[in-house]
Amino acid sequence: MDRIVIDGEILAGKPIIKGTRISVEFVLEMLSSGMSVEEILEEYPHLKRADILAAVAYAVKVLKNEEVYLNSQER
Image 1 (spheres, rainbow, N blue to C red):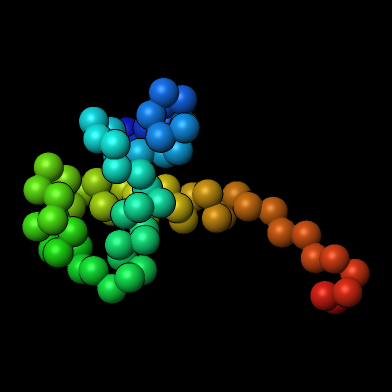
Image 2 (image 1 turned 90 degrees about the horizontal axis):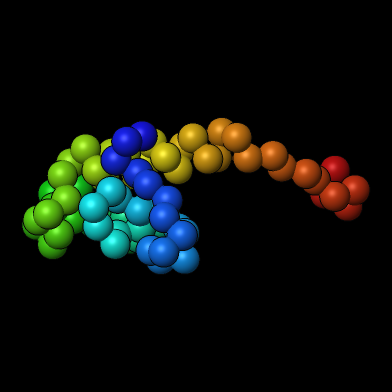
């Protein structure tokens, strides 16, 4: 996870790709909109494939640690 950093001075502390102002959230939005890794790399040539994969891995890690609480009406 050395490619993902959190700096309170950049993008209000959102996790970003190290050395950029590109957030993990933005990378995930591009992927979810249908952009391929290759298209993202063409659009943002300063990114590396490993940066995109690190963003996905970071999201997986966050979701694995997320706690879900169902309210009594959803059970």
